[in-house]
Image (spheres, rainbow, N blue to C red):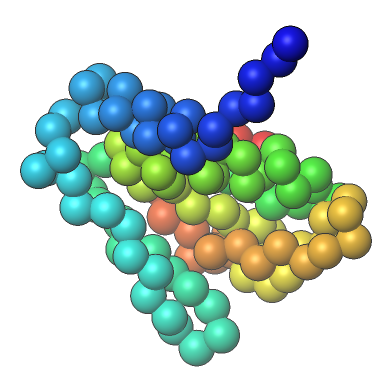
Length: 114
């Protein structure tokens, strides 16, 4: 008989493991969404790696937002989405995804996911 996975417990454990690997909780500053007109920009901690998740037309939402969720909860890096333009990107689930940045205003990307 299989046991259901408790997502909150799983993410808490991933977060705890990231803290052990990348530093103490007291040193974590976190990311804060800063509204800028109709878009959201993130405050970027210059001491952390930048992980950019590229959103492209017909992207599978889970492929983009699964890693985004895990990395954002771990707070071990700056994680954000970007696309060619800072406008909604149509996904394969017929839902628009809003990137944090477009190519023109995207911060440096140390690790890219697509």
